[in-house]
Amino acid sequence: MKEIKLISEYYYPEEPSTGYYIKGIAEGLAKDTNLTVIYTSSNASSIIREQEAGLKKIIVPSINIDKNKLLPRLYRLLVLSIRLLSRYLKEHRKGETVICVTNPAFIVPLIALYKRWNKKFKLVFLVHDVFPENLVASGIVKRTNILYKLILRIYNSSYSKADSIVTCGRDMRELFIKKTGAGDNSPTIEYIPNWGDINSITPIENYKDLIRKEYKLQNKLTFQFAGNIGRLQGIPNILESLKSIDYKDIAFVFYGKGACLDDILEANDSRVIYGGSFDKEESQKYLNLCDISVVCLQKGMTGLGVPSKTYSNLAAGKPILYVGEPEDEIAQVIAKEEIGYVCDLNEPGSIKRGINWFYSLDDYSYNLLSKNSREVAEKLFSQEKVIDQYCSFIKSN
Image 1 (tube, rainbow, N blue to C red):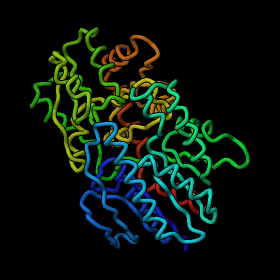
Image 2: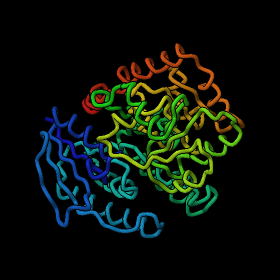
Image 3: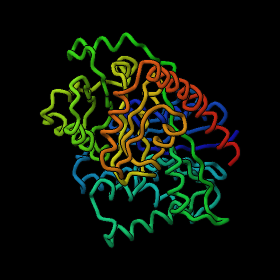
């Protein structure tokens, strides 16, 4: 039986986004392999060993520090990376496959350095966040910064040491082909998407009445954003576009937390509503409260991230208003499967046109979009289908 080590900063339920997918992948692969997952937890004060769902778990203590300040955050990433790598080295077995998630960021060059010295194992990078490019996208550094250019070269070289790289977006795959080259010795780069929970999240029309009564939204077209309200989501782009739209019978409802929450709270527009936040277990209810789901990324994020909440929105049968760039993974899905509208941030007025497009839909066209959304979730983005892709990929590499 194939020996696999999976290294990750996050694991569900402590981290409900990336950690949720890592847990699903680990449990799926463990059915046909001897898998050990090594991850961090703030609840661990020392190394913890557990056995669960057919896999072994080694839990490494995390470090509690302010993640919103740059220097403490970098220190935290370094400490976690060293702890995870140190634990892995003690568990290392010759000939095994190591799946290393790109969180924490500094684990990438550290394990690549070890791979350069010891080639008797297969290294697979599982990409969820792309460092250091995400520093540019978030405005922390400029692309012309000399230190950034040096770090970029180090990371490109580190990614190139892998045998394989798995990305969750086709745009991300194209980026990594450029980062690692296309030579005979370059890593195999595979696209495997994330998934939506199509069993727990299903379309339920009656839930819309709940939000309509609570916020007095009867007879209003309701758009909903649910997720991280951060700088990379580009929420201000939507709020600014609303100023040029005269419709009174629409509403934008936001759920979540993040750095741009104040932009929503201070919007001074009765059509903009903040509903707080909800737990993942409540997704069935809250994702069914709207007519249209809003998914967005800031300009310049192509290849750097995929909003995984999209797949849960599709499971709820919601058409998507996507704000980003046409090369983005979600934009590609929408265009190919005809499940919504893509607002190209490179074109002035595109968000307004997208809102107008949904506003002008008749019932038949809307219902067809909703039906398509659910069918796409079942056809392409179910957990079962995605895990099968992971199992096939690991078996053949």
